[in-house]
Length: 346
Image (tube, rainbow, N blue to C red; front, side, top):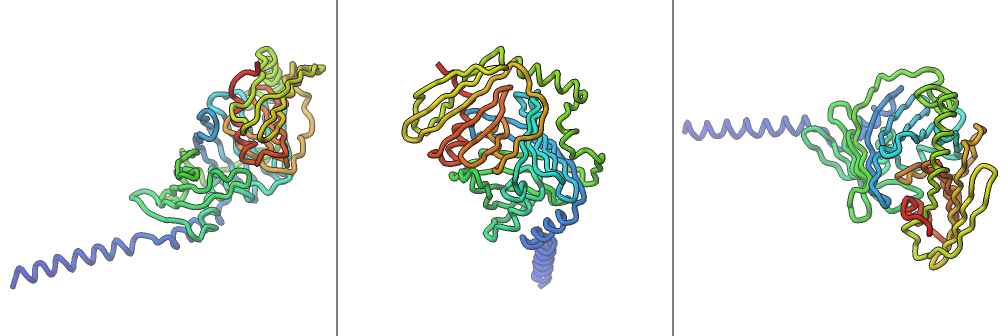
């Protein structure tokens, strides 16, 4: 009789422990509500992350600094680990959305709703919006993380339809993101190294002028480094062609002399035709107003590009590129551009 009572008490205590544990674990709805509350109340933050991309011919790793200040000001500095002298900044302030390449004195201004118009794997608010906007999001918990698997919204790339987002259980900030291809393989990984949710900024930290300067020493240093970067590219003329051509072959190559460099025009013909233009200049351009783009910001892996209609523009290692086609899809244009780090034109 005593043994029976003893086991009954043990069973009841065990059931009570399980019930208490279950009550302490947040449901998916609880976590979504807390995430939404956290980003709604954000006044500012700074974060750092590494982003590894396997979407092109070679794996690319970016070092990322992310700044945010209410209302709706962003600064995302992307530094390619292999090309640390050619960082780029995606900037959103009261004047618009910009992509800046300070070392080359180049800038684009976008007529864009970035970052709201597509998924951004390195922005806290974008990740939470993807969770909220996917009614079929999958949810699980571990000892340290809340994990969501959601659909993505990449307007210029449908080859990355899903993502896994890990949120810290204590702070509800993102810890890691895996962006998946159609075979559920991770092609992009973003690993965060911390969030400062009490960040403060100087009045001009989100200005275009300040962000066009090199961190190492202002305008004169910026001009000198820009000249050096362009001169190096001119000395090592890199006439590259894409290793992915969507079934087309090189049909024609033209070389045009410029006052300060050379323009190389390559035409590819086949299943889908396209033209690739490369401009290699001896001197950095004089700083001027940014080029206005009515299109999307596209991360190619090695660099950030501007996609406008049937044209994709970007700079890499001091060379300006322009890819144009009325026949390639957006995904194919991006894949062609990503492969232009390939072999030399013969």
